[in-house]
Amino acid sequence: MAQPLTVTRIAGALGAEISGVDLSRDLDNSVIAEIRRALVEHQVIFFRDQHMTPAQHLAFGRRFGQLQVHDFVDGMMDNEEIIEVRKEEYEMRNFGGGWHTDVSYLERPALGSILYAREVPDAGGDTMFASQYLAYETLSDGMKAMLGDMRAVHSARRSYGLTAPRRADEGKTSMGIRFTEEAHAEIDHPVVRTHPESGRKCLYVHGGFTVRFKDMTAEESAPLLEYLYRHAVRPEFTCRFRWRNNSIAFWDNRCVQHNAINDYDGQRRVMHRVTIEGERPV
Ligand code: SIN
View 1 (spheres, protein in one colour):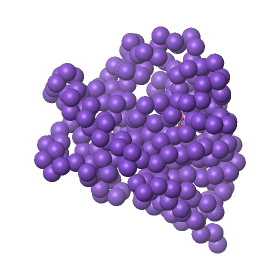
View 2 (cartoon, protein in one colour):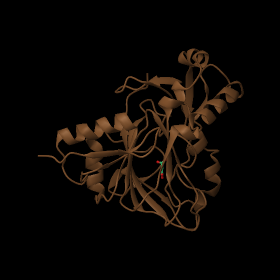
View 3 (cartoon, protein in one colour):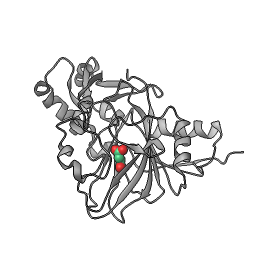
View 4 (cartoon, helix red, strand yellow):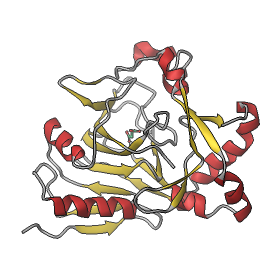
């Protein structure tokens, strides 16, 4: 008989730590269902002291859906569905810095990401998360009505396009990132999406991959988008996770933005991420 899980909230807005489960094991469907319920309720969940091989990490991820292979970041050798999020002592830029939700430039963006800490700095390198339910719910009725009919265009070009700022220090990045014409493709999604499991509405634009509103220019879109980006990550919508080696964060990309804080220059940080495919946002 499975042990009951203990779920402890870590902040007022979102986030809960779960104990009483060993994720390296072949868990019962009932335990996976409980973890999934906790994810939908708390939007991001955390586990400590997990000891998983890459194969066990992949197996855990697959219990929640099909895993994505990243279009622009090399996967690990033999495990292409795992990307190694790495910053070496000598590097200045981190991967995942700046508020965003993963791979929203895809037709079927990520349901969730499961990030496993292999080697974290003594201090710094936390990750922050922001609830996009709260971001939506705290808008005025007028703004909600206006955004309700709008769509936004997403593209990977700022991060992985031929003119991506990071390309300038390509030689210095230790991660295998491909900068390509394909990253300039565009897809549009609703600005306000309805979460397929909770049925709640949330804001779905962010500074990582949203480039403009559909049928508007980037210049016309910028003022309102900039306002929404600032509003979406107000401190009262966030939680902050302090990593230890072997910690796991599992976030729901459908309703959460995250930001890897880049405050640990001179120290190494190595994480493994698997990304679960989601549905087309509606
Ligand atoms: C990411 O955006 O996937 C990276 C998050 C992190 O390294 O904390």
